[in-house]
Image (cartoon, rainbow, N blue to C red; front, side, top):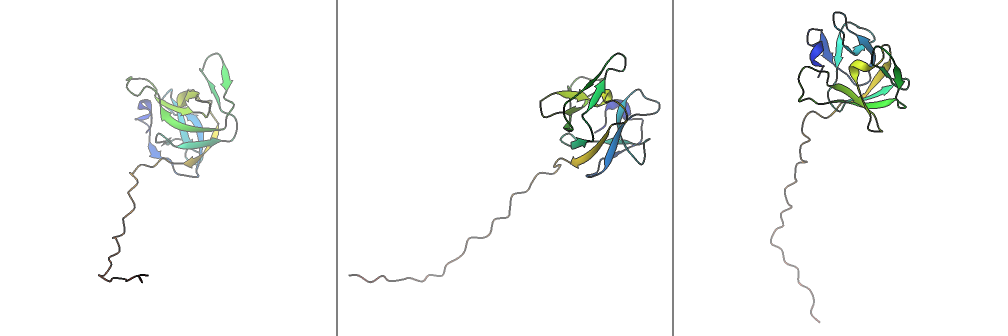
Length: 142
């Protein structure tokens, strides 16, 4: 839900409709999402969570350059989850491009549009077949 480097930071799950802001959490070098109202608490996203940013998304490598993705919507996911001790949290954009959450420029705002389905969708209950009573209809011959 939250990247491995945020396990020592207070956290909570995201809620539909809330506005998040990208931030660097105190005591870490990791960026992530926090609530506008409580910037010290990491807001964790489930893979498949859809976000709408207020502007085209900007990201950097913290030293030399800043780049912009020509998109304001993205879906949260994981990159290379099988590789230990590295950042996995990422935003995937409609063009297929992904950016690690820890590379997002601080201060960007995003609204949680939709959370993923976390429980299997149950099959609709089948109605019992209508029972007919043994009536017969005669057709005229002729």
